[in-house]
Image (tube, rainbow over all chains, first blue to last red; front, side, top):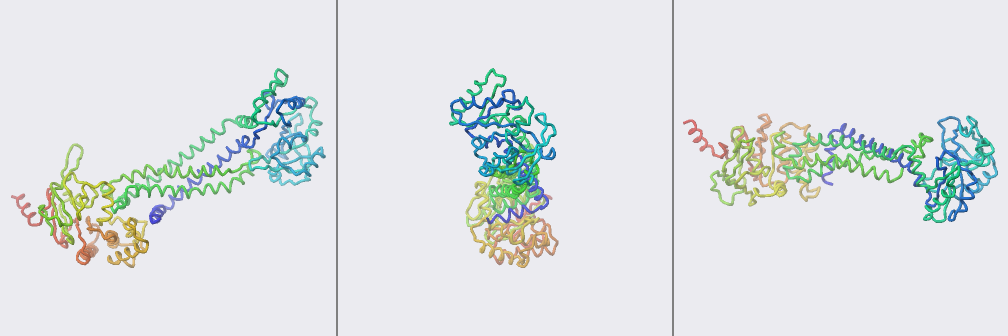
Length: 383
Length: 246
């Protein structure tokens, strides 16, 4: 600790330069966290996926429908516990920017299959008795300032219903049991949907979600389901919910690669900026370092001073992580509809912290070794 | 006593034997010091003079363990430093040598107090003990009232006095001064020389000083001249110069 004063005195020698370097760290860390949060949002499907859940879709693509009549056949396959189905509604509230996911659900089995999404029994009961009823995730309720009892118009362009506004009564609000559970969905009943769509779409659903008794049986069950409907007009593709979620994200391109690439470029640039700053700082102080060595400070002590300065800058730069903690919830609101709900996982903060320390250390190691090997006699000649 | 003929006894504080230093500049070998001998007893004040490039600073660097000789030996208070490893030499410098440079070489972001405290950070002294030592050193150099001033707030003479305080604070075996008045006006130079003189006479310090200034050199107990890589006393020097003229 007795050397702390020397380290801090050197650190604050050029306040403007210090501020800019800390700013570089803070901005880079903020960006790093934001990228991590976006990556997490895209990959959260795998996290929320139930280990015992399978998804069955049309083999051609998810936008192609499959018959509702498959449900009973699926239920007969050994190991299947329960099945529910959904359809995508694709509507918006009032204007295009107010997008959020709406699903036509099977009220009979929804809660059994998605047991992590919780709704009070009395609200669920009201919903079941209301043909125009809807259950809405807490995040979407908050986003639009809705409350139970509100009547909400939703416009869709799908199913030959272009521009038509459907009105729903909000009967209940669901919450996720875990932080990563999606609370943006809007559910309404299959019966209400089916009676309004054109004849050709009646009895057609988007996908099945089923629960199995034993997750170890999932590969066998998936194979059995797809075999059951092979060579039919609606062949199926069944996979685990996590595989389905991963495949869904892949449709957007290699998000992970993009994020890792941007993050790497950011940190490499930061490394160059900080390394250059440290190199200039050391060069300016060559005679002073020589004096320290002349009066008895060891090579390692000099290296320690240089590394400490850089690591302290990195630590102060971690204010960028704090900014991210404050900003992510706000950004989540701003970007609602464009991205899934943004959640800041603690591990992203830890990675950011470790990355900051690593960059702080790496950027000073070369100037530090230079200072360590400085020959006092040569350095004093430069005075 | 100060001797340059290698006849000093083992009781001398500093014993230099057959010290040679050569440099290579491209394919050329430059011999700066050749078989130089020197014995300095404790409490002596020695000035080194000589033309530019004669090797005065090189000799000072070798005596201070900042550079290593090509051959020969340097023994200080019984420790032969010429064969010490880099880290041992660093520890040795911290214990035995106080450096005073022409350009003061203070750390500009530290106060006078903090600059003087630097050598003590390498010791096991407590904070209170360090403070006491620093205050004593600054009082000796007459800057007891300026300990919280930064170098930029001090005159050149005052900066050099802080550098002297830094050099003496750890009570080293000897002081090495490289042109300590070279960057000062006459009045400040006189003050610094009076201070160094007091350190020798009142505090028993051993001082080896390089200077170009004969007025400054006269304050020393003895002035040695570096001529053609060897040390000679004033009388011998006159002979050498006379011989050269003949």
